[in-house]
Image 1 (tube, one colour):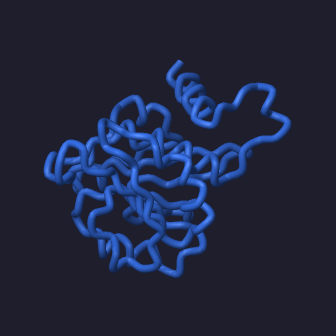
Image 2 (image 1 turned 90 degrees about the horizontal axis):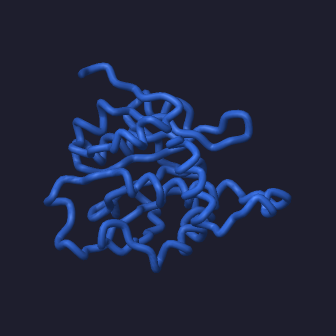
Image 3 (image 1 turned 180 degrees about the vertical axis):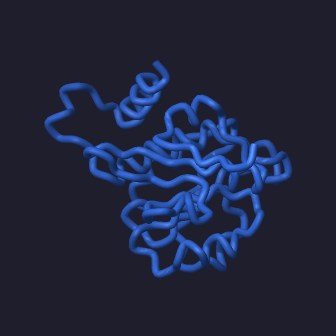
Length: 179
């Protein structure tokens, strides 16, 4: 049931209907929908936002097409926080970001991102194989032509990011060594 609700949310985001299946959304539209909907199920520590209405900042590294696709979110909010998208050219500008997406075209290694983020409350997302196993919180993966995700709950806990159990139930895999 939860998977059906999540799919409906994804479809509603883009106004998709079964008739739209002749012309399926491209991968960046799917990533946009996933980023938006995943963020709804994430809780950051109270001090992560300057105020109750401060923006939720999504930084995109190495995927300019995704940054452009995310522009559809400019008028949306998540828990009273307007969404702000930043196309980042380097890791020097991650200050203030709540989510960092490391794109396939990034000239930055995941390890460099993990070192820069440290234990800050930043949700790290990437597509690279083993992204979640090597220190990222959420990894997008394609399985049988569908976009899915893997969650590293240990890293999320270390970075004080809470992930709702409804989102965890939709994950392809949840990595949790320490309980």
